[in-house]
Image 1: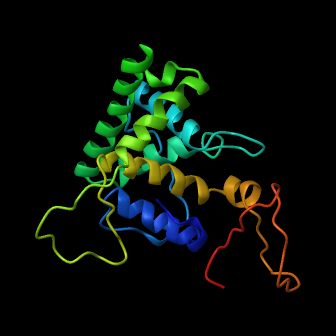
Image 2: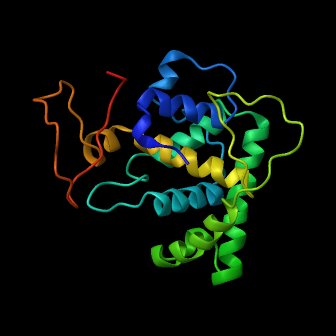
Length: 206
């Protein structure tokens, strides 16, 4: 999974575009993944499924979650505009497997379940999907800037990372979920962490 403590907003967006297999990325696209105007990639049932999945991964708590941050629409826009055909296929299949798991466990599609039942379905599915597997033999040298995690369901890992990356690069996450100071204040060498302590956001390495 993403180590959010070591990634700024631009890095998160770069990671998201790598995950969907984009080959060319304009500078402004790195700052915000826009939904494709007048063009939706996912059909209505799958978009509803994606919305339910995103809401389960980053639900609203005392701060807005992935749905309020517009993650489903942004991800749909990336699929329509930037994703490679292979990435589109992998993500669709991963979404469908979540729905199959829900129907097997609860006799309903994932999007039709209550939040508690979604969580009950997704936890074992997540654990199984993210089980580490042995990489194929004779692989070319790995790209250090795009490490590959070999798990049982690579498509599931990809869509989960996309939801997290798009959420934490959103304005809502940067201003309400994370603590942000455009100009740092006084130096505090030691600060007590409590249950109310939140991570800090950054727009760059400085």
